[in-house]
Amino acid sequence: MAEQEINQLTPDQAAEQAADLRTKLKNWATEYYTYDAPSVEDSVYDQAYEQLVALETAFPQIVTADSPTQEVGDTTLPEFTKVPHDVPMLSLGDVFSVAELRNFTHRLVEQGGVKPEFNCELKIDGLAISLRYENGKLVQGSTRGNGQIGEDITANLKTIKSIPHQLNKPVTVEVRGGECYMPKESFVKLNQQRQTDGLAPFANPRNAAAGSLRQLDSKVTSSRNLSSFMYNVADYDDLEANTQSELLAELKALGFNINENYQVAANFAEINEYVDKYQVQRDDLPYGIDGIVIKVNDLASQLQLGNTVKVPRWAIAYKFPPEEAETVVRDIEWTVGGRTGVVTPTAVMDPVILAGTTVARASLHNPDYLTEKDIRIGDTVKLHKAGDIIPEISTYIAAKRPKTAVRYVIPTTCPSCDSELVHLDEEVALRCINPKCPAQLTEGLAHFASRNAMNIDGLGPKIIQQLFAKQLVSDVAGLYTLTFEQLVTLDKFGGKIC
Ligand code: IVH
Image (cartoon, rainbow, N blue to C red):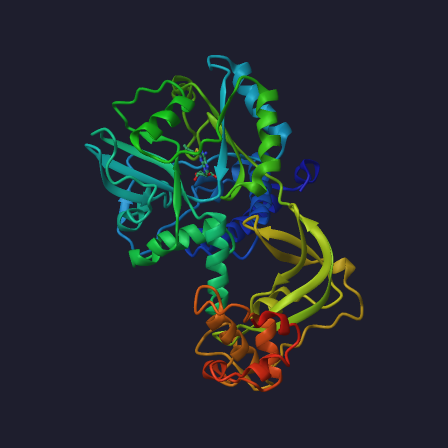
C-alpha cells in the first residue's frame, strides 16, 4: 500500500488491517519455520511484512507486543530439547532496493563515530545455527528458534562434514552463526527422490536443510549431504580479529568452513559492484543465496552501534528481487513413475527464458497441488525457480484467463494401462498399482539395465519400449532369452550388434 493511502486510514482501520496482516504472517511463519513447508513465496511474505511495518510506522499506537515485527519468527518443535540462548540470536533487517541499501550505508557514515568500511557477504539460503565449543571440543549445536530459545540438534549437526568436532585451538567459543545449507545438487536429487516416493517436494534448499536438520534420526540428516558456512561469534575471550573480514579468516584458521566470496568495500560504489556481480553469478553458485549481507567491518564500531531487540544496527540484508517469467500452459501431461507407480502431472508450456535457462515444463507435483493452484490449459502463468533451481508455477494470471479455460479434471485411470488409480493411505500422490503396467515395467527394466545397476550396454529406454511394444519381453528374465533374430528386427539396433 502506498504511503499516501496509509495516511488516509483512520487508526481503527489501520489497526484492523494490521491485525489481519499479523494473522497471515504468523500462519505463514509457522508453516515456514516450524514445519519447513511454506504455502506462499518468500516475496509474498516480505511484501505483507513491509505493509505491516508501514502501517505500524504511520500509527505507532497500533503496535502490539506479539506483532511479527517485534519478534524473531522461528519457533521450536516439542520433540527437541530446548536450548536457551544467553546472548539472543538475532535476525537481519531487510531492504529490497539498492536505493534503500544506499540510505542504510549513508546514514551510518553520516551519523559519524563509525569506521566507514563494510564487509560484503553472500546471504546463504540456509538455516541459522549456533555451535558451542569448550576447550576446542564441540559440546552443543542448536537452531535459532525464536532467538531466545532454540532446539538442541547436536547429534544431527555432528553428521555434517564441514562442522569440526575438534577445533585447531583448545578455545571456548560460541559460533553463531553460521548457516547450515543444502547444496543445489543435493536439493534437486532429494526432491526427485521425494517425487518418486510420492512425498511432497521441499519448496527451496532452506526448507530442505531445515527439514533435514530437525530429524529425530541422525542417519536421515547424515544422508542429506548438508554443508555449512560460519560467520560470527558470541562471547569469545580469545578473539584476535578487529574486523568482520579478519573474523572470517580467524574462523577459517580454527577449522570452520567460511564462504570465501566476501569482499571489503570502502564506499557505496564498491558495495553496488558486489551486489551486481553476485546478482549475475548467483545461478552459477553451487548453493542458493537470496541476497547480500552488508556489515560494518570494524568490530568496535559494530559494538558501538549495538542491536535493536530483533536485528543488529550494523548490518543489513539486501534481498534479490524474485526472478519471474510469464508463459502459456499448452498441456498438462501425466506420467507414471517407474518403480513406484506414482502418477505426476507436468505443465507443458511455451518455452521461456528464466534465470538463465529455457523452461518449457514444470512439475505440478500431485493432484492436490494442481487443484489448489487451479491451473488450466490456456492459462498465462507466472513462473519462478524454487530455490533458484527448479522451475515452478507461482500462480495463473486471472486477468489473462481465456473464457474457454475449464477446471482441469484429474484422471481416474492410468495414462499407460488404463487401470484405476488409487491414493494409498493418506498420500497426496496418485498411484497406478497394476503390477503389469507397461510404463512401470519399461521404466523398471530401464533402471535394471542402467549404468548404476546391471550396466547393459545399448539397452536404453527407447530399445526397451520397442521390446515391449513387440511383446518380445515383459520382465527382466525375458531379457536373457532374447535371440539375435529378434534383436535385429528393432529400429536402430542392427549396428549395435557385434
Ligand atoms: S549475519 C547478528 N551473515 O540470514 C548476526 N546472516 O535473514 C546476523 N544469513 O538470521 C546474521 N547469510 O540466518 C549473516 N552472511 C550472512 C548470512 C546470514 C545468511 C541468514 C541468517 C540471518 C538471516 C536473516
